[in-house]
Image 1 (cartoon, rainbow, N blue to C red):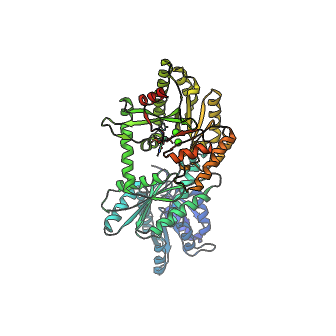
Image 2 (tube, protein in one colour; image 1 turned 60 degrees about the vertical axis):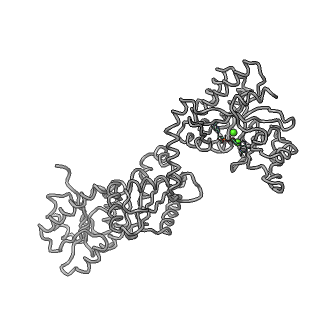
Length: 550
Ligand code: C2E
Ligand code: CA
Ligand code: CA
């Protein structure tokens, strides 16, 4: 046999306690408290071990009702049964107690069998329920929650419901930096917030799905959904000062109450993922476009290995021109995905996906190698060689072998480093300035030229420029004036170009499409021009021919 179940008796009368102990001590281990306050203290210490509480109503210091209110406010005790001892004429008491969630009553006459059976029953009942509750937070576990949602949606089949999914961004980091105990504390904190907000909402079900993920389902009410989201966001800010916690919240308005719960959950998960890293809003609503986008991304992922092994990726070169002489002076290598049917997938579609799943490291390597091969060929043929700049994904910057990999690559093809330039997008600098500065200095020491790509597109361009010595500034196309009377853009562009001059570094303007734009850039003293006006990205052969002609 296992350990005896523990019963807590809260009663100010020593005689009553003794009578109960006489009846129960054979089967149970007994703890005693003389009033509600003592009872709460014992619960604080022994709560997890207690199987049932026998409670008297009228006591000094803290009576039974006051005790029940405090006790029921803590979600972790939701499933701990309370049996109240009542006087013969206690109908009104019983009514009040039932409202407060009391499980059963025993008459103060203390009949031996009645007491034993009632206690046995409530404990058995609560043990069965325990299987439906998550042991850490005492909320419904996933299985029970799904079942309850299904019942709810069926019963109110005509009504529209909202399904919310709530978790914390970077929860894994909390676990690994501060320990699982701290992680558990955060999970319980969230459970309490949800419980407090939802317990009075009618036709509402909530539970813990897994780890730090919670879900809530309630009748359509966007104002309530927003309140929940905002309150969660606020509360997380106050949880602990030394790390910044942000919720990620997805909302799905259930379109058809007969849908599989797992499908509903998938949809809300898509929305929640979308909300990650968005600083604007506490929550994100599911849309069908999100799902289509996800399917497209999945298709890209399914095809990428095959595409790389079957030469569907190729490198285009976009020539760059000296602003003064209009002569070609270099190129940017841009990857292209050409499918067997001749259609082209835009880098804007697949690069972000590859950055997410890490495949970009392989793809960047492929592009760099193609560029090295091209440069080697030109050198071997004794033809004119201009520098080619390649794009370096931010993911590569976290790759510890990055500097070695590039160095080995150019050595393998015996390419003088002055021909192999590296473009790093401005926004990557903000991620981690300290690490990046180290990497870039190392690369520069080895002779590589570093271009800051998309300069001006981020939030702290000047700050980055202040901290990092880049060799070339690539001005984001957003700075180019769209029309003649776009005076503001013109002034800002002039300031950016002058700043590059003051820093004594060349500037490259991208996305130059019009003659007026070129004229202006030349007048302002921009060094190099890249854009459709002079040349689109083109296949290697075409680019080589263009170099030969110049
Ligand atoms: P980016 O590095 O800013 O590249 C410039 C983009 O502007 C290229 O788009 C280019 O085709 C386009 N462009 C050039 N001239 C003009 C113009 O006059 N007007 C307009 N509207 N656009 C112009 P693309 O090739 O679609 O590449 C998009 C982005 O994908 C690139 O932006 C870059 O961030 C990324 N990317 C491309 N190739 C690679 C690669 O090999 N590796 C990595 N990591 N990223 C790449
Ligand atoms: Ca670029
Ligand atoms: Ca760019």
